[in-house]
Length: 124
Image (cartoon, rainbow, N blue to C red; front, side, top):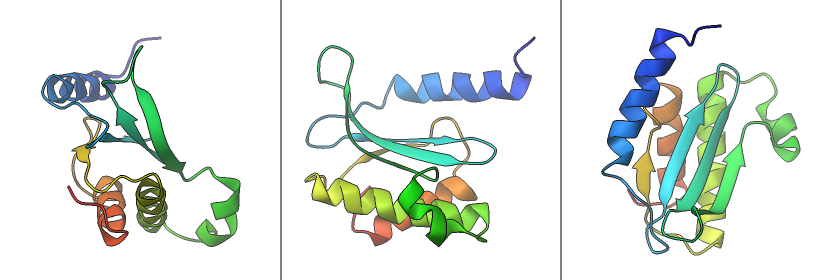
């Protein structure tokens, strides 16, 4: 099965951005992945050996969020996940991040997730 051209284009955009963006322990990379149904976010220290370390994470698949997400649109869910991610990052001692949209356009769910994280107090 061939990979869809739009997926290939997104991966190329992500690789192009990743050449310039890297997370550190003081300012980790906030990596976003958006599938058709769900949205995921990780805070990554790329300098940690051997190949980076996840400092905090959140996603729309978490069981404790299931009741809160019931009946909401995907954009509303993304904003809630962003707030949750921001809270977890703050708990892990993360104040500022480098935003990595993963080759996705800064629009819709990706933008809602970013706004939710900003509401939780993250700076980027």
